[in-house]
Every structure is written in structure tokens, then in C-alpha cells.
Amino acid sequence: MNIILSTLNAKYIHSALALPYLKLCCENPSREIKILEFTINQTLEEIRTRLFLSKPDILCFACYIWNIEPILLLCRELQLLLSDCVIILGGPEVSFDAKQVLAQNDSVRIIVRGEGEHTLREVLSSIERGDSQDGIKGITYRDSNGKTIRENPDRELIKHLDEIPSPYQGDLSPYQDRLVYYESSRGCPFNCSYCLSSTFQGVRTFSLDRVKSDLARLMDYGVATVKFVDRTFNANEKRARAIMEFILEKNTRTRFHFEVCADLLSDDFMSFLLQVPHNLFAFEIGIQSTFSPALQAVNRSCDMARFEENVRKLATRGNIHLHLDLIAGLPWETYTDFRRSFNDVYRLQPQVIQLGFLKLMKGSTLRQAAREHGYVFQAHAPYQVLSSKYMEHIDFIRLAQVETLLDRYYNSGEFQQGLTYIVEHIYDNAPFAFFADMARFYEENAWFLQGHKRSDEYNMLISLVENRFPGEENVVKEYLRYDYILNNRHKPLPERLVSNSNYDCQAKLYQLLKDRIFIGRELPEWCHLSKYELSKRVQLAAFNLDPTRDNNQKTRATLILFVYLPNQTKAIRTIFVENTIS
Image 1 (cartoon, helix red, strand yellow):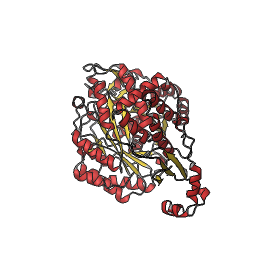
Image 2 (cartoon, rainbow, N blue to C red):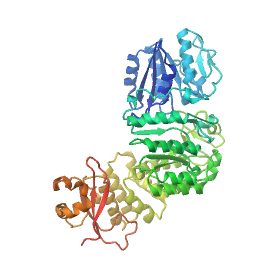
Image 3 (cartoon, rainbow, N blue to C red):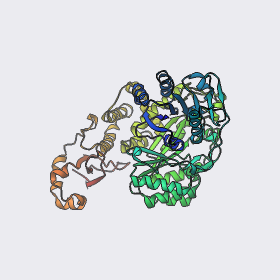
Image 4 (cartoon, rainbow, N blue to C red):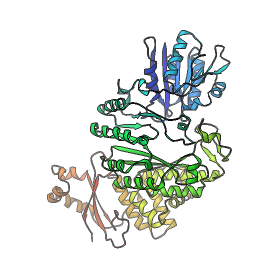
């Protein structure tokens, strides 16, 4: 029997954790099971062709909010082309309204609800034997006449997770150059009403021996990034630390991403975290809001003082990449309230701030209470909220524009010095005010309707300052010129950032590269390089102030050498050649 397990990932670098689990649990000598992964960016024709040529007897899709619509289209077309093929769906997007999905999609025969490892194995065996699926827990299906839809009782959750075979003890070549998703536990200790994890009670864990064995294999193979999908990795702090310490003992180059709850980090764990090497760990921290009524309304609790203290320490230390999540649209949080939440999180200065929008997921408690909060939301995936009692649709439009600019100007990490000066000194330390004003300026100039190069974004930022705060543009230009040179090796400056200084940087650079004492002191690792080779790795620029300082009231002009590694566009460091220039 030819069985295909498939899904459409959001990006090529992503991998579907569910599919190898299912394959290993369902394998036996009578079956040929293959995994075919695609992305939502591929054409339906390309995907349909690949699946058709595979000639599956059974075709199984893992369904999520980002892929459900193209998958249902594929099911309809493939059922017409492969009339004898049994199509099975599983995943969170079809588990909570399985009867409705079957009623609206004649091409689908069976839906596996919830955890699928044991359920799919029983389904495949029943199909091979020609038996009915009447006694199989955890499925909704069409009976033998193809018309009557039946729903069997739910299946109990798997108690001992180690009985699920590990996909990381076999061939790891499918994970080469891809982001590897890994789970050391299932479930969540919290009960957030917007999250599907709230539909399952308790937390179940794989054994530490199993986890360490898997991670050792992944690190030995040289996987670039492993993303733990545990909903709250540090729910059991002792276990979390044991895993991290194992990584530190074993690891050479793999980076690890964890979802953590910052206010749960104890003083002892914080001391440990502040000592880990740079760029080995990344934390995603879902604060969602700092507005207490909103958090209470979705069954979240947070010691805000503890949260801010821990995040600020981690951000100041800078050894762990921090990604903080906000959700716009929570109950009781108005546009003004969200603005305060945004400012609170921004001032903590994580590397990334994700401004997401509330989605009323199938099966979530909050979706069931949609009418109570006046939610208007998309009828199709991803079910994003469009308006509520607390925010009008225009508020969500404005926040979406802020999200776009947040990604361009903050999350890109490219405008750090310029943005710091603009937010703190021009907008009086009110970051949301800046992004909202920038969004209005974009709208006034119809820039949201156009594509832009990075250099354009610098020019547009200068235009905003000139328009709103005439007289500040010359200072801002110096900061932004520093940002651009730091992040864009040897690229021509944007037209609005070209310096009017008469200082001859090329002549000065030529003198520096001839000065073997300077090279030996500042660039000893490159002493063996010729002046020509050195010139390709450095850039000298003159500034009318010190662009690394926030306040330049008493600072004179500065000369800075930017140092780059070959084939990298961002400088690895800067050297102040002299304190001032005449």
C-alpha cells in the first residue's frame, strides 16, 4: 500500500514535526510510507503534480491555519484525478469542527482528531483489512456508503511519550539547512483562553535520557537551529536547566530557541542564564499585554515587576537573543491601552518585538465568547479579529501599519542609533508616538502602496524628521549615516545621507593602512594582508558628532573606522581613529 504523508509549510526552511512521528508509528512491511513536504509559496499546480505522480493509495495532510485552504483545494482536485485514493486530514485546523469539514468537503474520507500517532496507525490497518472504522477512537469519518458522517469518542492522550519513536535517531539528511522543530514536552501549565493548548490539561514530558539522546544527534550532525515547541519551556525549571546544561556541555555550533515565561525565572536560574555564551540561546517571551484587565480576561497571570526586571537584565547582558510578543485585540484593551503596552515592551529593548493580532482559533475558549466581546473576525483562516467592543476596525488598520514599520525600522536591527535618538530625544521617549506618526506620514505619501529598498527607508525617515521637526535633520542624518555604514558594507550612501564634509577620508584611510604600528595594534589578525586586501575589509567615515552617544551637546566631530569580515555586510566592530577631526 502506497501512503503519502504531506503538508504545506509556511517556509522552505521549516520542517513538519508531525509527519516523521506519524511515519515511524505507522510503518510496517506491508506499507510504503513517504513524506512529501511543500510550502504555501509553491503553486497548487506544482504540488498537485508531485502528489499525483506519487500515485498514493492513501493521502494524509497535516492541517494548520496557514495551509488549510490550499489543502482543501488540492483534496478536491486530487479526488477527481485519483478516485480510489483515500484522503485523510489531521491537525489542529480540522480537529475541532471535523463534522463540518467533512460535510463541506466530499473529497475527504477521514479526519484524525488530536494526537494522531496511534489513531492513524489503527486507521491504516482498518483500511488494509477492509474493515469499518467504527471502533477507532479519535476520528470523524464517512461510513461505507460515503454519505453518513460519524464521530467516534475522543482518544486518550498518550501517557508515556517515549513510546513514540524518535525521528532524530535515524537519517538526519532531511533536516539539513532547515529549522528543526523539537518538543521535549506536550501541553501547557497555563490556560490562556485564546490558545489551543488550553484545550488539553496538564503537561507530559519525554524522558531526559530521550531528550539528551535526540539533541546529541542533532548537534553532532551540525543542525543550524533547533526550535523547541514546548509551550512554556521553563515551567519545570530544574528540567529546563538540565537540558540547557547538557547543550552547553555538548554543543559546538547549533543555536537553540525556547519559549519561556520571564516572570517564572528564579534568581538562581537568571544567574545561570546571564553566564551562557553569546548567540547560543534565543528566547521567545509572550507577554502579550501589560494591561492587567486584558491578561485577566484571557486567564493569564504575570508578575509584571518580576517580568520587567528579568527581561531588562537579559537585554542589558545581551548574550541571549530576545523576542517579545504582543497581541493586539485582547478583551478590554483599547487602542490607548495597547499603546501603553507597546511602550512598556519597547523600553525593554529586546532584539525583536512581534506585534501580532488576536486570532479566534477553532476550539479556543475565547472564540466561544466572541459575541460577549463584540468580536468581528475573519470567517476563514487565520480567523483574525477585525473589530471589537474595545477597538474599531480603523484601530486595527493603524496597528497593522505600525506593525509593518516596526519590522522595517526596529526588528531589522539596522536603524539602532538613529531610532534611539529619534524616539528618545525627538518623540520624548514615546516609541508608539513615533511609529504611529511615521505610519501617518507613509499614508500621506502613499508609501504603503509601494515597494522600497533599504536606502529608501533611510531617505523616508529623514523626510519625516524634516517635515515634522525642522532643524533636527542634520543631527539625525549623522546617526543614520553611522547605522547605514555599519550595516551596509561599501554600499553607496542613500542620497539624503551623503555628507557635505570636505574631510578626505580616503587619504586618511590610505595613511592608516600604511601605518604598520596602527595595523598591528588595532587589526593584528590581518597584519599579513596587503593594503589592497585590507582596504576591502574596512571603511573610514567622518561624523560631525559621536554617533555612538545619545547626547552630543558637547561632542566634536569624530573619525571612525568600520571593520568587516569577508562576505559579510555588517561591521564586526568599529575603531575610533581619533577623538576629533579639524
